[in-house]
Image (cartoon, rainbow, N blue to C red; front, side, top):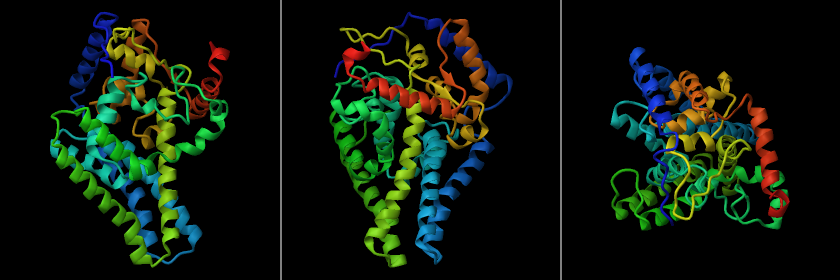
Length: 364
């Protein structure tokens, strides 16, 4: 894989100015960049939304339709924990205490993921090379969905705007089954890491043990406690994952796979046009920035512009930072992408999939 280099000149003053203003905001208001009581309270809400429905399924007699609804709710909570707790913690912004971040970041293990894989794929690859083909794995959906004009076109892509929504729900169940194994093999082979490179044997051991514990919790335990036939337990497991996968996939797509974001291509020497911070402005978009419920539930991931420029600042501050980022971008004549509503962003996303699904010469 070719080395990518960001410009050190093009609009370099933008980030220096923005960073100074953000630092001034935290200093003048005498607040920490990490989470506060709002985040800690929300963590309790999200964990409750995730675990309480599952506990009710295990302990109370109820009809199967009620079980199915509770597993949907568990999936909603699963995505909520991922976006609000795990995400901030593994960006080291949940708390100023490292052990708290490590503990809350470990919640990914009950979400079917793996800390090492997530930090490499998300913190290193996605946050560094946002929307750069062959470097940002978040825009690689294999052959089935074409997220970039730079990806190979297949005839099936003509109708991807119709079938893609059904595939989005498979995101987290793929984590549980195959993705983590493939990623760990790939990342360790390439010697990628977020921080010090870990011991490969230790990481493989953690992966195996965490997966066995995960399946024991979500599959074996219900079978033993409920004495329910295996296929019904697997169906509930699938319902939970499909719900969470759908939510998480759509939140990501609305931030990066929309018409107002770019997918830059490095030149033959691996150089990108912009500095890293400016690159984030061109490749990222906000949605529903004024919607309280969306802000609350998505963990501020509807403020992706702020998150991508300041990933080590907790999402509880993004609403306040948005004004600073937006004004500074305008001052430097740089884009600040956002859609006023989730509905508008969804419509634009699927329209964009339609454009990406057209035969290349038709959109050239």
